[in-house]
Image 1: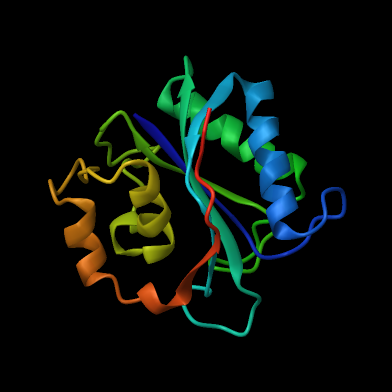
Image 2 (image 1 turned 180 degrees about the vertical axis):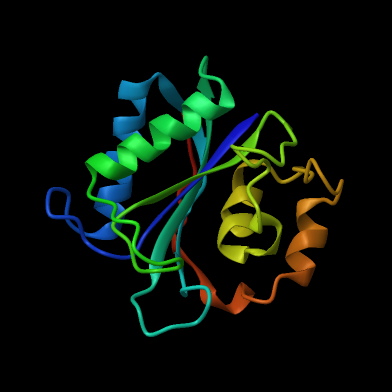
Length: 168
């Protein structure tokens, strides 16, 4: 299973508020041979690390594609770029952030690093991920999502925005 996390906390000039930007990004993925097969509910999440920047809107999706992991990550970066993503500082506010979380359980310490580093520590990834893959197991550690969530320190910063889970 291929899993992607999307987040935004700044409005985009062309798409508006973060949620609308993320919805447009999901559509844009299809132009890159990436088909969304399942998606989580929408969540608002506090910035990590804690800062005074706006809260994020986050979602996790499963996708199908014929792209290899590296080509997929390049396509995700291209979508970010076309939406106006500027990479200035780590953990900065952003118009769009798309992360390749898991690529069919592949473990790689070279580019692209998989599974995504720190995803197992981030409630803003794990909570929506549990919506669509409640039995997901971290490929490198073998730990289940509930065990990982039990140790996540930022759970209080994750709030449900929309109760609808969409399966395509």
